[in-house]
Length: 279
Image (cartoon, rainbow, N blue to C red):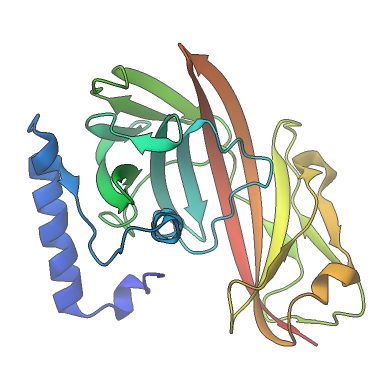
């Protein structure tokens, strides 16, 4: 599901991305839901399909916090190893609904981008998920410094009123341990350390994924950003098999607000990944 480095991507693929992007931007000017909503294709109508697409909507390595309220609508901005992305989903009961045309704007110099809307059928219900990652996979110039705002604007729909909303960024994460390529003995706990921030509402978590099977992973308990480190217990490391693995460390802030009857989550996350070997 991941998208490779742009310098390694064949020219034909890059041309296809450019064509899709141009079409999506052109559709932004239209009020027709049919013309602006994209069917990603290849999905058979199951809940597993929806989960798979939601994972595709943000760069590989992005981690949804375990404490996230899954019943709330969600606006997301993320930076994973230097790749910026924005995503959104709007709750209407158990479903994700249409909110009209959605854009995200970076701080000055102002750069507004379409957050493309995709439709995924699940049983007899169409689910709607928004993301920039599939149309601007390497070029979303959001600033992550702990102060800059990421501004979302939606034109609205019969179920979701038009709105403007701002997510305050978190600083980019500077990971100090373990080093890239480190060999980690699963029999011992491992310390993950970073250059700490000062905001106590920002948290850091770490996950370890098996390269051979990314469904095999462990996540550790949260640490507040100012603490500067956390420990992955050996009991959790041993749940991941010996071999190549990816350590993903995420700095994030989640804020919730009430908009009428809707609860809306604002999630900003900065992720650094490291290749490690488990023994």
